[in-house]
Length: 302
Image 1 (cartoon, helix red, strand yellow):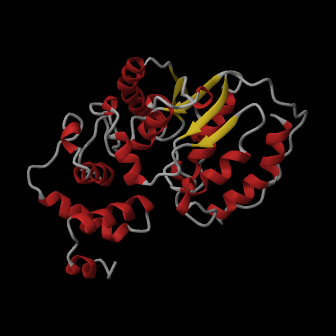
Image 2: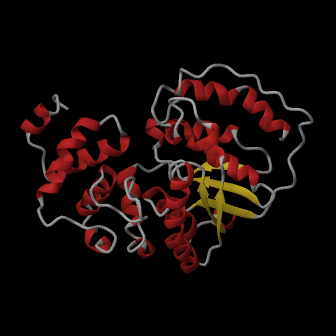
Image 3: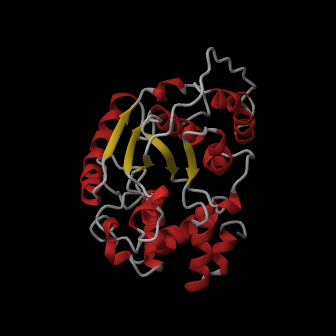
């Protein structure tokens, strides 16, 4: 481990993590024979999941004609570090999800490296699931590959306006604070497209034809496709619909014939406005379609 990273892990990193998860206790980090970092690699890497954050990062750092070479993505990572579930079941789902991503990476002309790790086994304490620890897990992969990577773009889901090291169910809220402390002078870890909210990211993705038959946002699927029923699928579908772009994604979403699915989602979303990604959709829907007062009253006046 580098001396710089060891220092940050002893000071700033645990303070930020305890801000997000107050139940965490202080720890002592002891590193024997800390070393200076190796010379930086050449690659600019980002994770490729096929989701909105992933494609928004690629829209800006790969597909955009004006992106500087210093931050243009040169390789993709697919990390099995816990997002697919535990044990053999998680590995099977990871493998199924990987297959279409390989094809997608090939069509972009980018190499895709898949990393299969048992790091999830280290997080057995209650309250330390993937959402609470994903930044650290994926940062570990970047450091594993630091000999070849000099810049790791992390597709964070929380916009700057909501960033804070305060109690939260998801460590994403602290990504822009954490990532600099998980870097060293030969490896930069940087949040990507954090200047945009969920609505803006989705709008950006609609200008990337590569995403039209590959967008994958589902949290319930067992076969690597979108179920079109979970809250995340429906959130994406209604956003695309409001953007006038849902028809472009008919091959990846099974859009209900009954238009009332939109109303049902908004009524549920009114109960979840603590999520930045949900707030923006509710606001846009209200501006463009209108939300009846009775719906807000049923949601406790939200």
